[in-house]
Amino acid sequence: MNKRYILALVAIAFAGAVVGGCTSNSVVGPIGPTTPPSAKSYKQIELLSRPAVKEAFEMFEDHNTTNRSEPYADPVLKSQIKSFAHAFRSTTWADTLQAVLYPNVMKVDLSQSTTKAAYLGYETGGATGSKFGGRALDDDIIDISLGAIFGNTLSALGLIPDDHKEAPCLTTDNVAYDKSNTQTFPYIQAPL
Image 1 (cartoon, rainbow, N blue to C red):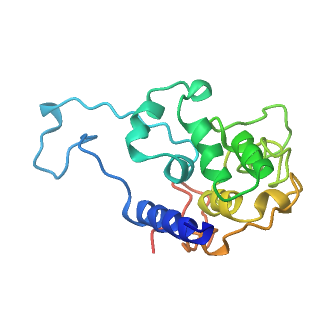
Image 2: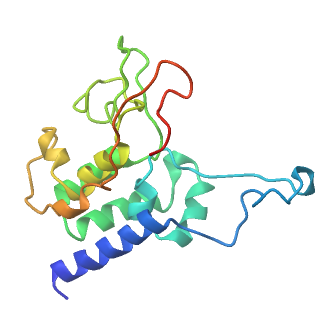
């Protein structure tokens, strides 16, 4: 198979996961108003600090293993980031992407004197806006993640040379956010 065919299959599978979501046989909570709250006890376990990371790199059957692992000792995600990226990006790109996106935790540098968080700011030395890290309310984290995986984000930030193997059609989820936040909780506008 040629690389474009493989990349197209990956794109279709990823689009299906993003648009359709993932399902499983496990029940996380009651569905519908007819189930009394006291009928069952629920425990939700989900390691999803960085949306799109597990969805892009991990097969669904591996999610449970990742969810039950220490973020810094995940037996699945770290290697899958590198092997997935290496299938269509340079080795340098795959290594850097793995270093930026693993572990699947939100890192912040509390010694920074800033009031602005920046998604992947800590991991990129401030290249995404501030060295504080974390995640600002108006950070488009899906597009930032997709840009790092399929686009030229890492080279545009000056982290590595461009490998010229971008797939521009996969660098966005095409969901707009108008950033008209408010000063009161819940701080964001009603869904469109």
